[in-house]
Length: 398
Image 1 (cartoon, helix red, strand yellow):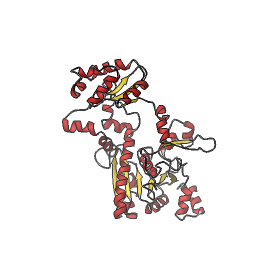
Image 2: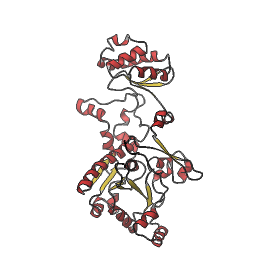
Image 3: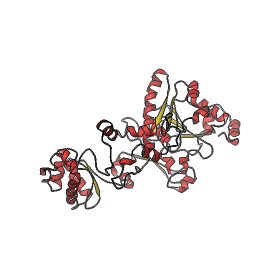
Image 4: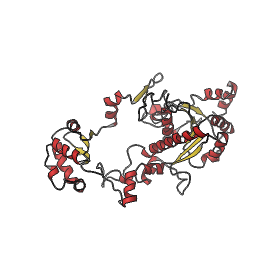
């Protein structure tokens, strides 16, 4: 069994932070029911590079974080839709939403209302800036959070910064933070029957992951600056040009630095007083990098990767997304799961959890669902008959 089997999650969220959170829970065995609006559902259904899939409400962006979930449609502005959600809440363990603060309260579906129905409910609200404070009512998208959190200010180099990280890191970190908080709250809810509300701020979640950068400012008064592909804690440590391709080298320890110099045919470098000590290497990192790159120019990144690994130097080629996904290492660990598509449709390929469990498979059991695929089944389980379900459909409640 997976660790969260038997846990019931209602996912009322859209696009990425909330759906990514609920996806992590689904990967660990939770039964996640995605509650979507009848007219179009999650916006992510219409996002992604495959325009035909997006036109079918199954965009690549949606598929990425919704496999393994069920989908029902409810109009939560209709009293009958609210009543159905309340029925679902009675047997739920977790509810995840990422509306702007106050929206659920205005619908009459805020934490106080839902916890009155189910006191053991763990209610997780994800927003850009949290539920209080002067920024709380602002709309928030990943790039806005990256900019305000200082991420962009330290991404790139002196010429190119500020730059956005190349994927929605703040959305993703917000979702991971929410999933961790939910799992912690579930421990208490299961032990003591007491739920609680979690207020997840994407801004604060992002800053919390910038530990060393933030701590250097808070505790040493050093304002972080963009350093491109250089590691601010050590040298030589960063990205290096070779005769063919780029190579990340992290020779952070003196022993590793000496081994690097031996492999590239420059055993003299550690004897240079500029490079003899860790701190002085950082002070002269530009000159040291030029010496190393001159030696690396004689062969390819793949050649140097093999040679340096043999000597215990931490190293890795800079790969593209297609290159790493095609790597035999990921194939051997079955990181990508493939589901056959419906007639005329391409297969769905999704990623598993970022960890392995010794006795279970932390991967989605089913593909991302079509909009409302489980609505009728769910309502029947709640006691609605076919005529009632048809009427709700005709009147736009489902």
